[in-house]
Image 1 (cartoon, helix red, strand yellow):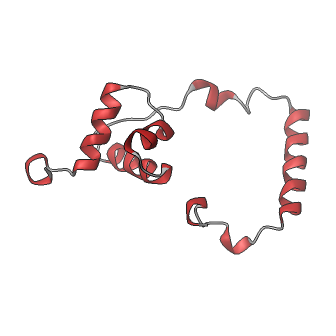
Image 2: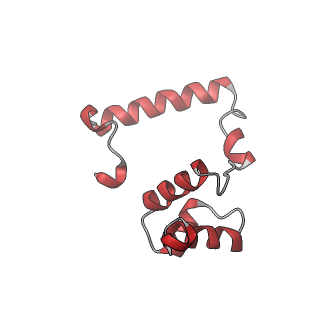
Image 3: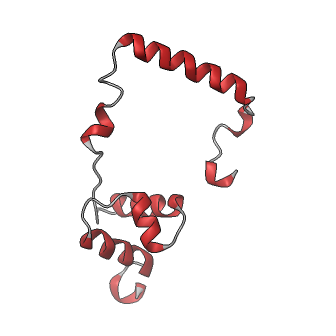
Length: 101
């Protein structure tokens, strides 16, 4: 398939699924392809970079934090800091994808 189409079977399959369900999320795409979410995410990134598809963030995803007032944001930041301290996080794993842990 790669010889005739110029791209591999997985990207073609992903584009087929995306065409069948415009607006499909990466998680749903991963489930449909029976692959790990990070694999689907990387596939989508490569398709975007190649210009085959484009992605959009849902409006509610962009606005969620921007709609919170300053006091709530400050409380959230403090609470997350407490959580991180209690988790005893290994700083050396900060750039390791969760799928690799």
